[in-house]
Image (cartoon, rainbow, N blue to C red; front, side, top):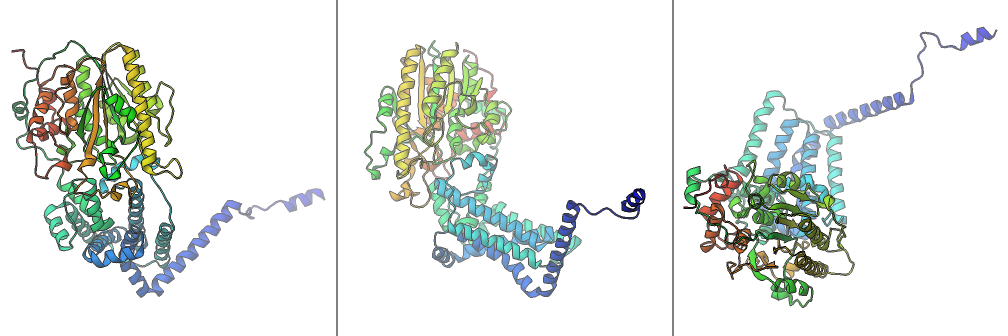
Length: 619
């Protein structure tokens, strides 16, 4: 009996096992998707007229939404629409060209709207955060910094406001409607190719071809004023707003791309170079270049009526050496511009003021001050207490010839952080003195600090300027400690100190706008107080009394310490007589120095003929 019951309970060979939980979930999902697709197909057929309206009004919707996100009040956006109607029409034109290209490419209305919607809103949100962080507007070339998004977010001022949440929700609602209604686009096969290429060609032509750009921008009254400084750029933004601004500044950058000089050759470079001079001193001092992040002297801005003791320690050190003023090529951001001019002794102006000049290097072994000091028997080091991958410094600067590169995770001294979370200057200067004490050869050290980088919001109920000045006070104290340590070392040392740019402040109503700084009077913000200090006698008489461009500074240091000056350095120094200021904010667009432009091209994008020229005989 038990055997009979056992056989009766066993499944027959034709009986299927019950579905597993995973199989039941998969079946339910397939069934749900099938019902959704059926509903979408029904909506596609049932609401053809509505779907046509949704399809062809989407570009208008996303343009208005992206632009509206840039204004504090809806009334301000409406005022822009009325006063700058032609610019808004230009935005619609560009949006429709891109939208039609995506429609023809994907053959899916909902997919094309999703791509355009997410792209436009992403640009709108990034611009909002960027301007609120440092008062500078978004350009398409800033996308090159996207791989550094983690580092950028560490000092970004990100504020989620109710209007921003509403606008983002509106976008997702619109995207959901486009998906659910499922509008149809019926062009098939080869008939899509030529129209798609045509839309793309028109878009590219407007952006990339100067003749077409000028005509179209003129027709729609898009502002194309040359942007010599951060303030004129911001004024252009006020006239064009987000989308037209991004397109026009992209055209501007393409139109000013670095060009190969006429008749560029070894012979041309050789005929340009002057003969160098032998060294005038037997002493090989340590040379320390401190490029202090965001260090600036706000006492220059008379409208602030600033009374502070924050600069007292800095002044005490600077007065022990020689003080002077240099012009830097950037304001509020893009530290690598000033860093490039110091490391290479070449003007960013000759590279059409690119935001990342070090990324333009197209030579395998670029000639810099690093390689030159190496050739003089120096040990060389780069110290930067921040992430090594930011601006690809570890990858690019590794080609400059530094014997040692120290980033935040390489520091060999105990480190402390400042209020904003960055490694403080005292720790960086301690690292410098440790390198000097541990190295028998003379050293060339370039350091780019981080202590005084924004944000300046690490204490409640304190203004940005107040917190910024706390950092300046600490920098002065750290400089006093550094010079005391250098004196104690007993090695001849020359210390060069300069700030890379004035600090950035937040967007609307920031410190600079509150005292009336604009494109017409912002030159003062590109002048930086600097000094050279030494613990032995050096000849600083070569330093000009008037401001000069910072790229001349390290050439002058060679002269001050009596080092040999090769043909290249001698030629650059000779340009100071005719062009002491070769920084764009101080010059008209057409003012060019052919020698500086030629040598910059040669060492950055050319064949580096000036770096491989044979040394002249003593005769």
